[in-house]
Amino acid sequence: MISPWDVVQSVLPVYLLIVAGAVMRWTGVMRREHDEGVMRVVYTIMLPCYMLDKILGSAVLKSGTVVVSSIGVGFGMILVGIAIGAVIGRIIGLERGTGMRTFALASGSQNFGFTAAPVVEILWSTGTLALLFVHNIGVELALWSVGVMIMSGERGIRWRKIVNGPVIAVACGLLLVSLGWDAHVTGPARKAMSMIGVGAFPLAIFITGCTIMDLVMAEKPTFKIIMGSSVVRLVLAPLAFLTAAKYLPIARELREVLVVQAAMPAAMTPIMLARLYGGRPAIAVQIVVFTTALSLLSLPWIITLGCEWIGLKPLLH
Image (cartoon, one colour):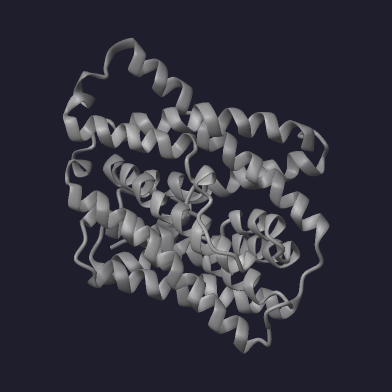
């Protein structure tokens, strides 16, 4: 048995990094012009190194069925979340042209990267973390295909957005694992790759805190958006994810991924999609800010109750 307090103690460092970033932005120590350079290094160099290091040697990824099901579940579950967001958006009185599409996409899209990965690594094994990266390919594909079509009203997949450093790292890692060549990636080169990647998520989470502070200062909250998105992201979507984790015929590691995904706040990607494709960024901003703040309270309970219901045991220290 685990308690919510056990989970809080384990994941608190992630939230403290977010707070630290927010404080550094508020005090002016970390300026906005610093963000792009830092995130470029993180996203194009550090993060791919980290992901490749974790994927190499992962036994669970030797199964093609597990890999395909992980991508499929990543794609499918975020669409479930968006559908729930659309229903609640309609209930609270939103329509197309008044923020309906942005609300559905933002409230239905869980954080699958910079906040999720450290929590997965803290709670579960390296194999689960490696599977999260594979699962995220499905999420990226869903956001840059269906997500863009919802936001813009157009059809087509933005392949250039999907083919990026992390996706290339996952593809290379899966190829090496499937061929059995990952066992030969050792020695100083592997150590150097690990050293480069180890700071990727702390830096990214820190910058996320800076960004959230920018968002807090830029937008005024709307009660119905806050309440509606909280119901979607912190109540209904978690129920859907935990139900999938319990009843779908999937690997244990993917169940563990889904438990963490169930507890995540809203993703930041919909803010960018709203800005690029004619949505309402202010709505997405509110959803990200408030679900992130509230998730510190909801996350421990979702993970605790989810683990007990499904029969999983986190590796809490």
